[in-house]
Image (tube, rainbow, N blue to C red; front, side):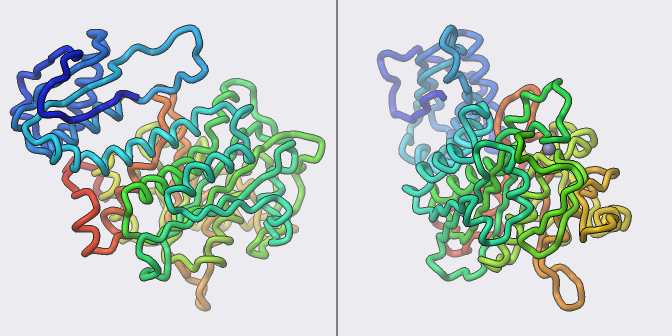
Length: 454
Ligand SMILES: [Zn+2]
């Protein structure tokens, strides 16, 4: 990660660089310019650099610096023979360094939170398992004022989380639920926003084992939970005036001798029973218990889950979009707006509209639901999760619900970065922070990128 700072004049050790078009830079595109500039410095093999941005407006300089910082992410802690080259230290000289630094601070903390989440995504599964993952989250987030509670397997059993426990029982490391609560409203907002993340630290498929091609990528099957943890870090770091609860549903899906068999029937925390037709459809099982738990315990107004859930979502939308399934039009518009600003994009798929998917998840002879309802894959996974949203007396959903299937962007083939921290942070900043406080403390929504419209 490149050190990026602002100063009134260039340090003597730095190579001075000027950008001819700097004066014409605009706030909407400065972040992309910063990313390009990083690549330029990398190509020129420049290490310590001072960039003269003269009288540039502080918010433009801040966006530029954020682009530069974002482009500098690497994960090379296990490379002992060679390090990726790139600029180590960039000083941006400007007539108002303090104002630029103030504008940059919230962007920097969000970008650093995204890096922290990306590191979790990139860790191999022999390092990151449900136990070490929970430890890392606790060590990082507790000092920021986030309440962290780790629900261990024996407590999960007492609570009745039979679906999540079934997923982890073939592994030598038992599953965990990590519950994060951040209240920047000091109790004023009673009902929180709930974020739930799939955290399968390795997905072998279990007894329904996956083919070996690309199985090594299944260390990234916890990307949804990393996005949630990273977003919580971002919110607390910048003191967001919002009440947000996160649940990380952690398990390792392995074909050990105690592993769940295809054909098993388990009872979930909600009370609904599930026929496990395929042990590789495990994400929806851990999420089912996490979604039930967060509603019982916190009564959230909205439940959002992020999960690298189905190959079908990735086949439909590639790396570019997360598949978005929701029961609420307003929530969809909020996500579209946040996606356009953050650059982490979403595209709507049918949830309440699909009668086929809703019927398929109940089409099983001996249990309430099946995790193996076949095609259409992404839609049936979403319909399965919706079964765990609490219902009103008339059968309608009691809460707003958004399911983001991030199997495409959360497991990228080219750029190994976590996905979702910027989106969730922007969503909260724009729609879930107390207004008066947001004007003083939250970063201004200055980015006006064009994004997908419904
Ligand atoms: Zn799986």
